[in-house]
Image (cartoon, rainbow, N blue to C red):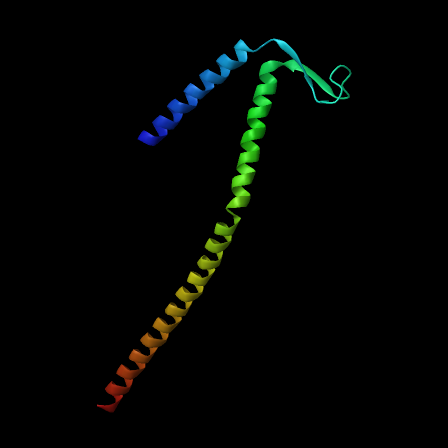
Length: 115
């Protein structure tokens, strides 16, 4: 419960910072994507500065998440393999337990018949 409250509080503070950043950077800018000819760029975009800031922030989060996902692929594969192995061992233990129980029951029945 405390973790959830802290998470909501941090999210609320982050939203306030982002709204303040957006309001402070409402002026129009031109983003030129041609470093070789800045006077006559082949590709340029006009928009409010905070839109470019938020686009860069979102792109960074997405690229960082993808990098983390791909770098942890080895560990996910290991976990999946070991989970499958554990399930096989569990099934084997349950099978052996059933066989043992059946053997014990059969032995009791034979001992009662022999008396």
